[in-house]
Amino acid sequence: MRLCLVRESQELEQTPTTAVSQRRLRLLAARPTWDRHIGKKGMTSVTDTRAMYLDLMRRSLTRYGFDELAPVGAGRQSLPRRMLINALAKRNYVLAHPRPFDKHKRELGLDWPADAQTMVGMQRLFSLQWCIETVLVEDVPGDLIECGVWRGGASILMRAVLAAHGDATRCVWLADSFAGLPTPDAANYPADAGMRLDLCRGLAVPQTEVMANFERYGLLDDRVCFLPGWFKETLPNAPIESLAVLRLDGDLYESTIQALESLYPRLSNGGFCIIDDYHDIEGCQKAVTDYRDTHNIFSEIVEIDGTGIYWRKE
Image (spheres, rainbow, N blue to C red):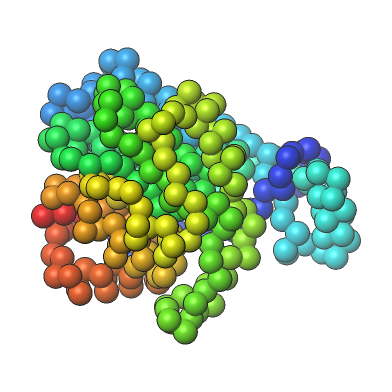
């Protein structure tokens, strides 16, 4: 493996990619093909400028097609290499190795891009765009929100879709601690026991960095609204009257159930509830199941890419 030094403002941290399970392959076989849906009902076609702009946005946000320099984490290295990595980090350097683009992983959001603004993959972005365009066509009232935004990529696409379609009224809300995930509260949320995602520094992206990412695409304006803090503190009283798209990417049971309890009642009929980590994190799936069971929600769950799902509120 060839190694090189990269100087950056922040050290990035990589997590290992798990193999695609047989369950995921079965789910993939049943999923819609989102690029075939985009363009229905008169919204876009593959030849018009709007579709080309949004396609370019998705590719840029995911760094689709690009090789990259992937930072080498210190966790599983030999002691001498860990010492080297830590010493370099103190001088604002990162030890990195070349990593070729993997189409399959980037399509399905199975890798952790070093430079991209999102890790959700192309299929989930296709689906998100389709959901937004559907509520625009059908005039489902409400704003858009993402709970758990990382570097802001999915939220940037939300704003881009609104801009591309000339929407002048809806806001895009970003709810995040901008400091990583909370320490698991296993006493109140047993499903989160042992989920120490709070220790993953790569998930803590400051609000200033997310705002800078919006600015790079020319999409930071007064209709991009931030809700910094833990969900339990910010979402119950968030100044949001109604929602047309509710996208949850909080990973934990606690984060998912708190977001559903605070925001799902504000989701308009016909609006979309999107769950990013439904098939990857058991606590997230359990929170969704518990909430749907408690509130007698029987709307069909639609598979996206073997990881994410959505349903429409009836």
